[in-house]
Image (cartoon, rainbow, N blue to C red; front, side):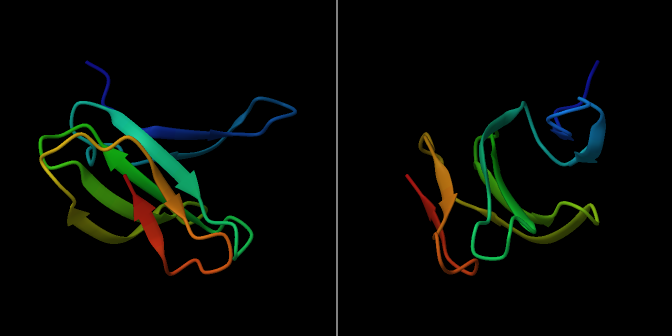
Length: 91
C-alpha cells in the first residue's frame, strides 16, 4: 500500500520537487501550510492519526525539525503566522 506523504510539485512543469514524510504520517495528511515570513522554507503538516501529529519540515532539505502531538480532537487547519515563521496556529 502507498504510504501517506506530501509531494511538492513544480507548478509549470508538474515535476516532483520533493517528497516529504514517507513513513512519518499515519492514515493521511489532514492539513498543511508553507511559512510565509521566510519565503516558504518551512512546511508544517498535521496528520490524521488519533493524536494529530504536527511536524515542521525544511521541505527543500527533507529535514524534519520538530514533531509534537496536538490533540485527540479534530484539527481543521494549521497555519504559520504571516510575519513570524516561529509561530504556528491550529484550530
